[in-house]
Length: 321
Image 1 (tube, rainbow, N blue to C red):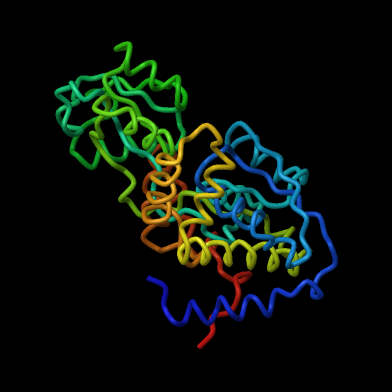
Image 2: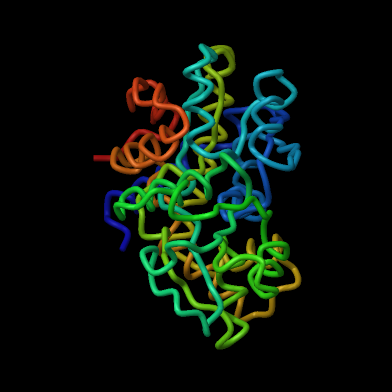
């Protein structure tokens, strides 16, 4: 439920983000992939929030976080809709990666199997083949983290196989190539819409996690503080609008996933709004800690990067007392 403080801030945003404050400026925005993390940006575009602050968004969609971050580091995009761990990596490399707005503050994945499977949890899958989207990716690292949390060994007790997303993962589960697979929103909801075909074996979506945010480099932030405040402020306003009115999110879901019927659109919007999207644009410290623990499975050096070095709120609108 929105607080009075956030309601006042919404009103203040309408006044402070006036068109006269900025000339029309192009912002080169990249997205690691088509995912729920992009929905607040779509809402901001549909509702004219970027236009209000004088920004014209030119968006480039990449096939994964790696190419998107390379483009960010190379300067062909200015801001990236990327996983929080990419900002962590940029900071480690001395490039000063920062999450300036949290978009998703919980995990997006769930481990699913066919309804007729005996699998009920990770322990019952011991000795099984489990599919992940890619080796070393978010699903892979999170699965290995969860397996270790369960007191099991991801190498000795499971066969973890890189399959891909969506349709490829669904085909691998249904033809028996794997016993369970990691699916993300909206594929989770699409599987559930099939009826009694799939079940969730392990739901990572309850895990606070710095899943996705607007990522920028220190050098760009220093050179473009007003532009950074504009994109952060408009995105924040979209997050507030989503929490106040689910219908604006449903419109964005329809645009991103035009083949979904109305029932699936509403389900995706409801799940994303309640369980994934940030309601204040700020990364929760526990979400950061969980992210660091997960990505440190292949690289323990990430533990040395503190929260304050990566997760900032400097460019968000000031709270109204």
